Image (cartoon, rainbow, N blue to C red; front, side, top):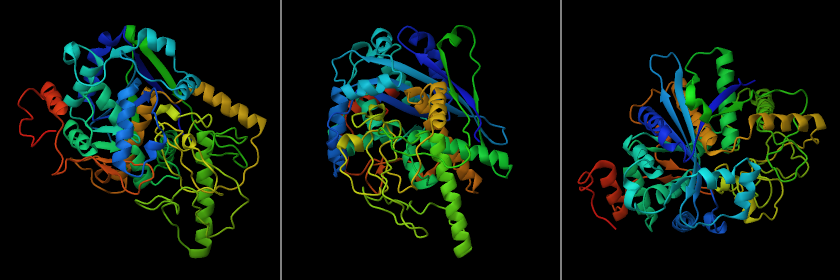
Length: 501
Protein backbone atom coordinates (compact mmCIF):
# COMPACT_ATOMS: atom_id res chain seq x y z
CA UNK A 1 0.00 0.00 0.00
CA UNK A 2 1.43 3.37 -1.00
CA UNK A 3 0.58 6.55 0.82
CA UNK A 4 -1.67 9.19 -0.71
CA UNK A 5 -0.51 12.74 -1.22
CA UNK A 6 -1.71 15.87 -2.96
CA UNK A 7 0.74 17.68 -5.22
CA UNK A 8 0.15 21.42 -5.70
CA UNK A 9 0.89 22.48 -9.29
CA UNK A 10 0.97 26.21 -10.02
CA UNK A 11 -0.64 27.07 -13.36
CA UNK A 12 1.19 29.83 -15.20
CA UNK A 13 -0.22 31.67 -18.20
CA UNK A 14 0.21 35.06 -19.82
CA UNK A 15 -2.00 36.98 -17.38
CA UNK A 16 -0.09 35.87 -14.26
CA UNK A 17 3.40 35.24 -15.69
CA UNK A 18 4.90 38.51 -14.43
CA UNK A 19 3.18 38.15 -11.08
CA UNK A 20 4.67 34.67 -10.60
CA UNK A 21 8.09 35.56 -12.04
CA UNK A 22 9.79 36.28 -8.65
CA UNK A 23 8.49 33.01 -7.17
CA UNK A 24 9.62 30.96 -10.18
CA UNK A 25 13.10 32.51 -10.27
CA UNK A 26 13.53 32.02 -6.51
CA UNK A 27 12.44 28.39 -6.78
CA UNK A 28 14.98 27.82 -9.56
CA UNK A 29 17.84 29.54 -7.73
CA UNK A 30 17.29 27.70 -4.45
CA UNK A 31 16.64 24.24 -5.93
CA UNK A 32 19.06 21.35 -5.54
CA UNK A 33 18.03 20.04 -8.94
CA UNK A 34 15.32 20.82 -11.50
CA UNK A 35 13.18 18.28 -13.35
CA UNK A 36 11.66 19.32 -16.66
CA UNK A 37 9.00 18.09 -19.08
CA UNK A 38 7.25 19.37 -22.21
CA UNK A 39 4.07 18.85 -24.25
CA UNK A 40 4.62 19.15 -28.00
CA UNK A 41 2.43 19.84 -31.01
CA UNK A 42 3.90 16.86 -32.88
CA UNK A 43 7.05 15.10 -34.06
CA UNK A 44 6.80 14.73 -37.80
CA UNK A 45 8.22 11.64 -39.50
CA UNK A 46 7.94 8.87 -36.94
CA UNK A 47 10.10 6.42 -38.86
CA UNK A 48 13.04 8.85 -38.95
CA UNK A 49 13.02 9.00 -35.15
CA UNK A 50 13.93 5.31 -35.11
CA UNK A 51 16.82 5.67 -37.54
CA UNK A 52 19.75 3.40 -36.84
CA UNK A 53 22.18 6.30 -37.15
CA UNK A 54 21.92 8.66 -34.18
CA UNK A 55 23.03 11.59 -36.35
CA UNK A 56 20.03 10.91 -38.61
CA UNK A 57 17.74 10.76 -35.57
CA UNK A 58 19.05 14.10 -34.41
CA UNK A 59 18.37 15.68 -37.81
CA UNK A 60 14.80 14.34 -37.75
CA UNK A 61 14.17 15.76 -34.28
CA UNK A 62 15.69 19.10 -35.34
CA UNK A 63 13.31 19.25 -38.29
CA UNK A 64 10.39 18.65 -35.93
CA UNK A 65 11.60 21.30 -33.46
CA UNK A 66 11.96 23.90 -36.23
CA UNK A 67 8.43 23.32 -37.56
CA UNK A 68 6.48 22.40 -34.42
CA UNK A 69 6.21 23.97 -30.98
CA UNK A 70 6.18 23.45 -27.23
CA UNK A 71 2.59 23.80 -26.05
CA UNK A 72 3.30 23.39 -22.36
CA UNK A 73 6.40 23.44 -20.16
CA UNK A 74 6.52 21.90 -16.72
CA UNK A 75 9.33 22.16 -14.20
CA UNK A 76 9.66 20.87 -10.65
CA UNK A 77 12.22 22.40 -8.29
CA UNK A 78 13.47 19.95 -5.66
CA UNK A 79 15.30 21.58 -2.75
CA UNK A 80 16.99 19.16 -0.36
CA UNK A 81 16.40 20.23 3.24
CA UNK A 82 19.40 20.02 5.53
CA UNK A 83 19.44 18.76 9.12
CA UNK A 84 16.96 15.99 8.36
CA UNK A 85 17.46 12.35 9.32
CA UNK A 86 16.16 11.24 5.93
CA UNK A 87 16.26 12.71 2.44
CA UNK A 88 13.57 15.38 2.60
CA UNK A 89 12.86 17.74 -0.29
CA UNK A 90 10.79 20.88 -0.57
CA UNK A 91 9.09 20.63 -3.95
CA UNK A 92 7.62 23.43 -6.07
CA UNK A 93 5.90 22.50 -9.33
CA UNK A 94 4.97 24.87 -12.17
CA UNK A 95 2.96 24.19 -15.32
CA UNK A 96 3.34 26.87 -18.02
CA UNK A 97 0.84 27.11 -20.88
CA UNK A 98 2.70 28.47 -23.91
CA UNK A 99 1.83 29.84 -27.34
CA UNK A 100 4.34 30.05 -30.18
CA UNK A 101 3.84 33.38 -31.97
CA UNK A 102 4.98 31.95 -35.31
CA UNK A 103 3.26 29.53 -37.62
CA UNK A 104 3.79 25.94 -36.55
CA UNK A 105 2.51 22.49 -37.38
CA UNK A 106 0.13 20.74 -35.03
CA UNK A 107 -0.65 17.11 -35.79
CA UNK A 108 -4.18 15.71 -35.54
CA UNK A 109 -3.16 12.78 -33.35
CA UNK A 110 -1.42 15.23 -31.03
CA UNK A 111 -4.61 17.25 -30.67
CA UNK A 112 -6.61 14.09 -30.07
CA UNK A 113 -4.25 12.83 -27.40
CA UNK A 114 -4.02 16.15 -25.58
CA UNK A 115 -7.77 16.69 -25.59
CA UNK A 116 -8.30 13.17 -24.23
CA UNK A 117 -5.97 14.07 -21.37
CA UNK A 118 -7.59 17.37 -20.50
CA UNK A 119 -5.47 19.87 -22.41
CA UNK A 120 -7.46 23.09 -22.96
CA UNK A 121 -6.66 24.50 -26.40
CA UNK A 122 -9.07 27.41 -25.86
CA UNK A 123 -7.04 28.39 -22.82
CA UNK A 124 -3.79 27.98 -24.70
CA UNK A 125 -4.75 30.29 -27.55
CA UNK A 126 -6.37 32.83 -25.22
CA UNK A 127 -3.85 32.85 -22.35
CA UNK A 128 -0.68 31.08 -23.49
CA UNK A 129 2.65 32.76 -22.74
CA UNK A 130 3.96 33.96 -26.15
CA UNK A 131 7.42 33.12 -27.45
CA UNK A 132 9.46 32.97 -30.68
CA UNK A 133 11.71 30.10 -31.72
CA UNK A 134 15.34 30.25 -32.76
CA UNK A 135 17.74 33.09 -31.97
CA UNK A 136 16.87 36.08 -29.79
CA UNK A 137 15.05 38.95 -31.44
CA UNK A 138 14.74 42.44 -30.04
CA UNK A 139 13.32 42.33 -26.52
CA UNK A 140 13.78 38.56 -26.16
CA UNK A 141 17.04 39.07 -24.26
CA UNK A 142 15.46 41.49 -21.80
CA UNK A 143 12.50 41.67 -19.47
CA UNK A 144 10.29 38.89 -18.16
CA UNK A 145 9.51 36.27 -20.80
CA UNK A 146 9.85 32.54 -21.26
CA UNK A 147 13.23 32.80 -22.99
CA UNK A 148 14.63 34.83 -20.09
CA UNK A 149 13.19 32.29 -17.66
CA UNK A 150 15.25 29.67 -19.48
CA UNK A 151 18.27 31.96 -19.09
CA UNK A 152 17.62 32.04 -15.33
CA UNK A 153 17.58 28.26 -15.39
CA UNK A 154 21.01 28.23 -17.03
CA UNK A 155 22.39 30.85 -14.66
CA UNK A 156 21.34 28.78 -11.67
CA UNK A 157 23.79 26.01 -12.70
CA UNK A 158 21.58 23.25 -11.33
CA UNK A 159 21.47 19.60 -12.44
CA UNK A 160 18.80 19.11 -15.11
CA UNK A 161 16.65 15.98 -14.89
CA UNK A 162 14.48 14.64 -17.73
CA UNK A 163 12.80 11.36 -18.65
CA UNK A 164 13.99 10.02 -22.02
CA UNK A 165 15.15 13.54 -22.61
CA UNK A 166 16.72 13.77 -26.08
CA UNK A 167 13.59 15.17 -27.76
CA UNK A 168 12.98 17.51 -24.79
CA UNK A 169 16.47 18.97 -25.02
CA UNK A 170 16.28 19.55 -28.77
CA UNK A 171 12.94 21.36 -28.45
CA UNK A 172 14.13 23.40 -25.46
CA UNK A 173 17.22 24.53 -27.37
CA UNK A 174 15.27 25.55 -30.50
CA UNK A 175 12.27 27.14 -28.78
CA UNK A 176 13.86 28.98 -25.85
CA UNK A 177 17.59 29.22 -26.51
CA UNK A 178 18.91 29.55 -30.07
CA UNK A 179 18.83 28.12 -33.57
CA UNK A 180 19.85 24.46 -33.48
CA UNK A 181 23.25 23.43 -34.83
CA UNK A 182 23.25 21.01 -37.74
CA UNK A 183 25.54 18.41 -36.15
CA UNK A 184 24.86 16.29 -33.08
CA UNK A 185 28.43 16.68 -31.81
CA UNK A 186 28.03 20.46 -31.75
CA UNK A 187 24.69 20.13 -29.96
CA UNK A 188 26.08 17.90 -27.19
CA UNK A 189 29.10 20.19 -26.82
CA UNK A 190 26.77 23.16 -26.31
CA UNK A 191 24.67 21.24 -23.77
CA UNK A 192 27.74 20.38 -21.72
CA UNK A 193 28.46 24.11 -21.35
CA UNK A 194 24.84 25.09 -20.80
CA UNK A 195 24.40 22.64 -17.91
CA UNK A 196 27.78 22.29 -16.18
CA UNK A 197 26.15 20.61 -13.15
CA UNK A 198 25.09 17.73 -15.40
CA UNK A 199 22.10 16.28 -17.20
CA UNK A 200 20.36 13.16 -15.90
CA UNK A 201 17.86 10.93 -17.66
CA UNK A 202 15.54 8.97 -15.37
CA UNK A 203 14.69 6.64 -18.25
CA UNK A 204 18.32 5.55 -18.30
CA UNK A 205 18.41 5.36 -14.49
CA UNK A 206 15.26 3.22 -14.42
CA UNK A 207 16.59 0.83 -17.06
CA UNK A 208 20.17 0.38 -15.88
CA UNK A 209 20.32 1.44 -12.22
CA UNK A 210 16.91 0.64 -10.69
CA UNK A 211 16.31 -2.25 -13.12
CA UNK A 212 12.52 -2.08 -13.01
CA UNK A 213 10.36 -4.42 -15.08
CA UNK A 214 9.19 -1.39 -17.09
CA UNK A 215 10.51 2.13 -17.39
CA UNK A 216 7.78 4.35 -18.78
CA UNK A 217 7.26 7.41 -16.61
CA UNK A 218 4.08 6.64 -14.70
CA UNK A 219 5.15 3.06 -13.97
CA UNK A 220 8.62 4.12 -12.78
CA UNK A 221 7.18 6.86 -10.56
CA UNK A 222 4.59 4.62 -8.90
CA UNK A 223 7.10 1.80 -8.47
CA UNK A 224 9.53 4.18 -6.72
CA UNK A 225 6.70 5.48 -4.55
CA UNK A 226 5.63 1.93 -3.65
CA UNK A 227 9.16 0.75 -2.83
CA UNK A 228 9.81 3.85 -0.72
CA UNK A 229 6.58 3.31 1.24
CA UNK A 230 7.39 -0.36 1.81
CA UNK A 231 10.84 0.55 3.11
CA UNK A 232 9.37 3.12 5.51
CA UNK A 233 6.74 0.68 6.78
CA UNK A 234 9.35 -2.03 7.27
CA UNK A 235 11.28 0.34 9.53
CA UNK A 236 14.64 -0.79 8.24
CA UNK A 237 17.84 1.16 8.49
CA UNK A 238 19.11 3.59 5.92
CA UNK A 239 17.61 6.70 4.45
CA UNK A 240 14.14 7.19 3.01
CA UNK A 241 12.54 9.80 0.77
CA UNK A 242 10.09 12.39 2.09
CA UNK A 243 8.54 15.36 0.33
CA UNK A 244 7.21 18.67 1.60
CA UNK A 245 5.19 21.27 -0.31
CA UNK A 246 4.64 24.97 0.12
CA UNK A 247 1.46 26.21 1.79
CA UNK A 248 -0.04 28.54 -0.78
CA UNK A 249 -2.39 31.25 0.45
CA UNK A 250 -3.75 34.60 -0.64
CA UNK A 251 -3.94 35.46 -4.35
CA UNK A 252 -1.39 32.76 -5.19
CA UNK A 253 -3.81 30.05 -4.09
CA UNK A 254 -6.05 30.92 -7.05
CA UNK A 255 -3.41 29.57 -9.43
CA UNK A 256 -2.82 26.23 -7.71
CA UNK A 257 -4.14 23.00 -9.17
CA UNK A 258 -4.03 20.26 -6.53
CA UNK A 259 -3.21 16.90 -8.10
CA UNK A 260 -4.15 13.93 -5.89
CA UNK A 261 -1.86 10.91 -5.94
CA UNK A 262 -4.08 8.17 -4.59
CA UNK A 263 -2.76 5.26 -2.58
CA UNK A 264 -2.44 1.98 -4.43
CA UNK A 265 -4.66 -0.87 -3.33
CA UNK A 266 -4.23 -4.65 -3.24
CA UNK A 267 -7.25 -6.53 -4.57
CA UNK A 268 -7.68 -10.17 -3.67
CA UNK A 269 -7.22 -12.88 -6.24
CA UNK A 270 -5.79 -12.60 -9.71
CA UNK A 271 -4.78 -9.24 -11.11
CA UNK A 272 -6.40 -8.81 -14.52
CA UNK A 273 -3.79 -6.53 -15.99
CA UNK A 274 -2.02 -5.82 -19.24
CA UNK A 275 0.60 -3.26 -20.32
CA UNK A 276 -1.07 -2.78 -23.70
CA UNK A 277 -3.84 -0.18 -23.97
CA UNK A 278 -5.21 -0.85 -27.45
CA UNK A 279 -8.91 -1.67 -27.03
CA UNK A 280 -8.03 -4.45 -24.63
CA UNK A 281 -10.55 -5.87 -22.12
CA UNK A 282 -7.94 -6.23 -19.37
CA UNK A 283 -7.18 -3.59 -16.77
CA UNK A 284 -4.42 -1.07 -17.54
CA UNK A 285 -4.26 0.52 -14.11
CA UNK A 286 -0.59 1.20 -13.37
CA UNK A 287 -0.94 0.33 -9.68
CA UNK A 288 -2.39 -3.06 -10.56
CA UNK A 289 0.35 -3.67 -13.13
CA UNK A 290 3.04 -2.95 -10.54
CA UNK A 291 1.35 -5.25 -8.00
CA UNK A 292 1.10 -7.96 -10.63
CA UNK A 293 4.82 -7.60 -11.37
CA UNK A 294 5.60 -7.74 -7.65
CA UNK A 295 3.59 -10.96 -7.18
CA UNK A 296 5.20 -12.49 -10.22
CA UNK A 297 8.65 -11.61 -8.86
CA UNK A 298 7.81 -13.20 -5.49
CA UNK A 299 6.66 -16.42 -7.15
CA UNK A 300 9.87 -16.56 -9.16
CA UNK A 301 11.93 -16.06 -6.00
CA UNK A 302 10.10 -18.89 -4.25
CA UNK A 303 10.81 -21.24 -7.14
CA UNK A 304 14.47 -20.28 -7.11
CA UNK A 305 14.68 -20.71 -3.35
CA UNK A 306 13.28 -24.22 -3.63
CA UNK A 307 15.50 -25.23 -6.56
CA UNK A 308 18.71 -23.30 -5.87
CA UNK A 309 18.46 -22.14 -2.31
CA UNK A 310 19.18 -18.53 -3.20
CA UNK A 311 17.50 -15.42 -4.49
CA UNK A 312 18.57 -13.46 -7.51
CA UNK A 313 18.41 -9.70 -6.99
CA UNK A 314 17.87 -8.26 -10.45
CA UNK A 315 15.13 -9.27 -12.89
CA UNK A 316 16.30 -11.89 -15.37
CA UNK A 317 14.99 -9.88 -18.28
CA UNK A 318 17.28 -6.94 -17.50
CA UNK A 319 20.94 -6.95 -18.45
CA UNK A 320 23.12 -3.89 -18.07
CA UNK A 321 23.55 -1.90 -21.27
CA UNK A 322 21.68 -4.47 -23.32
CA UNK A 323 18.22 -4.43 -24.86
CA UNK A 324 16.33 -7.24 -26.53
CA UNK A 325 15.13 -6.58 -30.03
CA UNK A 326 11.47 -6.42 -30.88
CA UNK A 327 9.73 -9.79 -30.97
CA UNK A 328 12.55 -11.55 -29.13
CA UNK A 329 11.19 -13.84 -26.43
CA UNK A 330 12.89 -14.43 -23.10
CA UNK A 331 12.36 -18.07 -22.12
CA UNK A 332 11.32 -18.78 -18.57
CA UNK A 333 13.68 -21.33 -17.07
CA UNK A 334 11.15 -22.58 -14.55
CA UNK A 335 7.84 -22.70 -16.39
CA UNK A 336 6.53 -23.59 -19.81
CA UNK A 337 5.39 -20.65 -21.87
CA UNK A 338 1.66 -20.01 -21.56
CA UNK A 339 -0.65 -19.69 -24.58
CA UNK A 340 0.14 -16.92 -27.03
CA UNK A 341 -0.88 -13.51 -25.74
CA UNK A 342 0.59 -10.24 -26.94
CA UNK A 343 1.11 -7.84 -24.09
CA UNK A 344 2.71 -4.55 -24.98
CA UNK A 345 4.04 -2.38 -22.19
CA UNK A 346 2.92 1.20 -22.83
CA UNK A 347 1.46 4.10 -20.92
CA UNK A 348 -1.84 5.84 -21.60
CA UNK A 349 -1.85 5.24 -25.35
CA UNK A 350 -5.39 5.33 -26.65
CA UNK A 351 -4.97 3.91 -30.13
CA UNK A 352 -2.54 3.26 -32.94
CA UNK A 353 -2.50 6.93 -33.92
CA UNK A 354 -1.86 8.41 -30.48
CA UNK A 355 1.50 9.71 -29.31
CA UNK A 356 1.75 9.87 -25.57
CA UNK A 357 2.30 13.53 -24.78
CA UNK A 358 3.24 14.01 -28.37
CA UNK A 359 6.79 13.21 -27.69
CA UNK A 360 6.60 9.60 -28.54
CA UNK A 361 10.05 8.64 -27.55
CA UNK A 362 10.42 5.44 -29.34
CA UNK A 363 11.31 2.17 -27.72
CA UNK A 364 11.83 -1.25 -29.06
CA UNK A 365 10.53 -3.77 -26.66
CA UNK A 366 11.78 -6.32 -24.20
CA UNK A 367 9.90 -9.18 -25.79
CA UNK A 368 6.46 -10.23 -26.96
CA UNK A 369 4.87 -13.64 -27.29
CA UNK A 370 4.45 -13.86 -31.01
CA UNK A 371 5.85 -11.78 -33.88
CA UNK A 372 3.30 -9.21 -35.04
CA UNK A 373 3.34 -6.48 -37.63
CA UNK A 374 3.61 -3.27 -35.66
CA UNK A 375 3.10 0.14 -37.23
CA UNK A 376 5.60 2.90 -36.61
CA UNK A 377 2.98 4.92 -34.72
CA UNK A 378 2.41 1.95 -32.43
CA UNK A 379 6.14 1.72 -31.78
CA UNK A 380 6.22 5.40 -30.87
CA UNK A 381 3.03 5.84 -29.03
CA UNK A 382 4.01 7.11 -25.68
CA UNK A 383 5.32 10.38 -24.46
CA UNK A 384 8.60 9.86 -22.87
CA UNK A 385 7.16 6.69 -21.70
CA UNK A 386 7.55 4.90 -25.01
CA UNK A 387 6.17 1.66 -26.26
CA UNK A 388 7.97 -0.93 -24.25
CA UNK A 389 7.20 -4.58 -24.69
CA UNK A 390 7.75 -5.79 -21.19
CA UNK A 391 8.13 -9.49 -21.80
CA UNK A 392 5.76 -12.41 -21.55
CA UNK A 393 3.11 -12.31 -18.89
CA UNK A 394 0.85 -15.05 -17.68
CA UNK A 395 -2.58 -15.29 -19.32
CA UNK A 396 -5.10 -13.18 -17.45
CA UNK A 397 -8.88 -13.45 -17.24
CA UNK A 398 -10.96 -10.51 -18.33
CA UNK A 399 -11.30 -7.65 -15.90
CA UNK A 400 -14.54 -7.73 -13.94
CA UNK A 401 -17.03 -4.85 -14.31
CA UNK A 402 -16.31 -3.81 -10.71
CA UNK A 403 -12.58 -3.69 -11.40
CA UNK A 404 -13.12 -1.57 -14.50
CA UNK A 405 -15.37 0.81 -12.58
CA UNK A 406 -12.77 1.11 -9.81
CA UNK A 407 -10.03 1.83 -12.34
CA UNK A 408 -12.16 4.47 -14.06
CA UNK A 409 -13.01 6.04 -10.72
CA UNK A 410 -9.35 6.20 -9.69
CA UNK A 411 -8.33 7.77 -12.99
CA UNK A 412 -11.07 10.36 -12.63
CA UNK A 413 -10.04 11.23 -9.08
CA UNK A 414 -6.41 11.55 -10.07
CA UNK A 415 -7.43 13.86 -12.90
CA UNK A 416 -5.02 12.22 -15.30
CA UNK A 417 -1.28 12.19 -14.83
CA UNK A 418 -0.13 13.30 -18.26
CA UNK A 419 0.50 16.97 -17.84
CA UNK A 420 3.84 18.74 -18.20
CA UNK A 421 3.96 20.03 -14.62
CA UNK A 422 2.96 16.77 -13.00
CA UNK A 423 5.19 14.75 -15.31
CA UNK A 424 8.10 16.94 -14.24
CA UNK A 425 7.19 16.19 -10.63
CA UNK A 426 7.16 12.43 -11.32
CA UNK A 427 10.53 12.70 -13.10
CA UNK A 428 12.02 14.49 -10.10
CA UNK A 429 10.59 11.91 -7.71
CA UNK A 430 12.23 9.04 -9.60
CA UNK A 431 15.55 10.86 -9.57
CA UNK A 432 15.43 11.73 -5.86
CA UNK A 433 14.41 8.18 -4.94
CA UNK A 434 17.26 6.73 -7.00
CA UNK A 435 19.70 9.08 -5.25
CA UNK A 436 18.30 8.10 -1.84
CA UNK A 437 18.54 4.41 -2.72
CA UNK A 438 22.17 4.85 -3.72
CA UNK A 439 22.92 6.23 -0.24
CA UNK A 440 20.86 3.49 1.41
CA UNK A 441 22.93 0.67 -0.07
CA UNK A 442 26.07 2.13 1.43
CA UNK A 443 27.51 4.20 -1.37
CA UNK A 444 28.71 7.55 -0.02
CA UNK A 445 26.96 10.58 -1.54
CA UNK A 446 29.13 12.40 -4.05
CA UNK A 447 29.62 16.13 -3.93
CA UNK A 448 30.18 16.17 -7.68
CA UNK A 449 27.29 13.99 -8.85
CA UNK A 450 23.96 12.75 -7.54
CA UNK A 451 24.06 9.53 -9.54
CA UNK A 452 27.62 9.21 -10.88
CA UNK A 453 26.75 6.25 -13.09
CA UNK A 454 24.01 8.27 -14.82
CA UNK A 455 25.73 11.63 -15.17
CA UNK A 456 25.37 13.10 -18.67
CA UNK A 457 23.93 9.88 -20.12
CA UNK A 458 20.75 10.18 -22.16
CA UNK A 459 18.67 7.14 -23.02
CA UNK A 460 18.53 6.15 -26.70
CA UNK A 461 15.60 4.00 -27.78
CA UNK A 462 16.68 0.74 -29.34
CA UNK A 463 20.34 1.27 -28.44
CA UNK A 464 22.47 -0.63 -25.94
CA UNK A 465 24.47 2.44 -24.90
CA UNK A 466 23.35 5.97 -23.98
CA UNK A 467 24.20 9.25 -25.65
CA UNK A 468 26.94 11.04 -23.72
CA UNK A 469 26.64 14.79 -23.17
CA UNK A 470 30.27 15.80 -23.58
CA UNK A 471 32.37 18.13 -25.67
CA UNK A 472 34.76 16.08 -27.76
CA UNK A 473 38.14 17.30 -28.95
CA UNK A 474 36.79 17.32 -32.51
CA UNK A 475 33.56 19.25 -31.92
CA UNK A 476 33.18 23.00 -32.11
CA UNK A 477 30.70 25.26 -30.38
CA UNK A 478 27.91 26.85 -32.40
CA UNK A 479 28.13 30.61 -33.01
CA UNK A 480 24.53 31.11 -31.88
CA UNK A 481 25.40 29.27 -28.67
CA UNK A 482 28.42 31.48 -27.97
CA UNK A 483 26.31 34.58 -28.54
CA UNK A 484 23.70 33.24 -26.14
CA UNK A 485 26.37 32.48 -23.56
CA UNK A 486 27.31 36.14 -23.70
CA UNK A 487 23.71 36.94 -22.76
CA UNK A 488 23.75 34.41 -19.93
CA UNK A 489 27.16 35.14 -18.44
CA UNK A 490 28.23 38.44 -19.96
CA UNK A 491 30.52 39.15 -22.89
CA UNK A 492 33.97 37.60 -22.80
CA UNK A 493 33.12 34.86 -20.31
CA UNK A 494 33.15 32.14 -22.95
CA UNK A 495 35.85 33.68 -25.12
CA UNK A 496 38.23 30.86 -24.27
CA UNK A 497 36.06 28.29 -26.02
CA UNK A 498 38.13 26.73 -28.80
CA UNK A 499 36.57 27.03 -32.24
CA UNK A 500 33.11 27.81 -33.54
CA UNK A 501 30.95 26.60 -36.37
